[in-house]
Length: 255
Image (cartoon, rainbow, N blue to C red; front, top):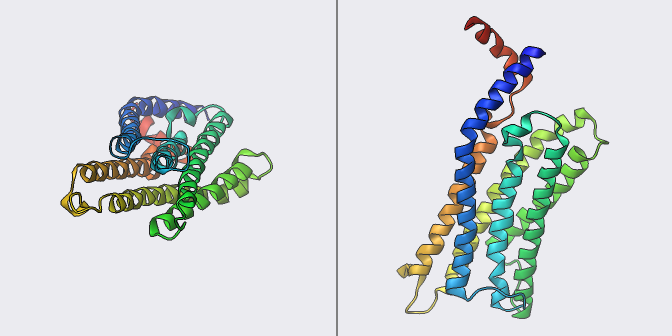
C-alpha cells in the first residue's frame, strides 16, 4: 500500500510538469473561440442587446460557444487535472457539477435568445438540421447532468451502481461535446448562408466575414478535438492501483 502511494505521488508530480503546456494551449484556444465569436457578432452584425431583435440573436452563438463548447470542456477536464488524483474527491465532484451547471445555464440563455428572436419575427423554430442537432445536444446535456448529480454526487448510490454507470457517463460526456461541436459548425454555416445572400456579398465569393467565420469554426474543431483526445487518452487518466502494481517490479529491478 505504501509503495502504491509512493508510485502514485511520483506519477502525479511528473504529470503536473507536462500538463501545464497543454492546459495553457487549451485555455488559449478556448478563449480565442469565444473572443472570435464575439468579434464576428460585433464587427459584422452590430453587437448585442436583450430586446428580441437581431442583436438579441447575436447573443446566441456567443453563449453556445462559451457554454456548450468551452465551459463544458473545462468541466469535463476536471478529472484530468493531476491534482484531482489524490485527496478527497468531493471538492472535485462539486467543481465538475458546478462548471457543468454554469455551462448549462449559458446554453439555456442561448436558446432563449434565439427562440425569442424567432417568435418576435414570426420565424418557425426547430426546422433546420442545425436546430435539431442543437436541441438534441441540450436535451442529452440535461439528462447527463441530472444523472450525474443523482448518482455520482448524492450519497445514496452504491459503488456497484456507480461503477456500472461510469463508462456510460463518460461516453455520453464525450458524445455531447462532439454533438456540440457539430451544432456550432452547422450554426456558423447556416448564419453565413442567411447573412451573405446579396449579389455583391455572396458566401461563394468568400468575403472577409466568411473567411473569419470559417476560421472561427475551424478553431472550434481544433479545440474540441484536443479536448476529446485528453478525455479519451489513457495517459491522461488517473493511474489505477492495478496498473501501478504492475509497474512495481520494474521499479524494483531498476534500483
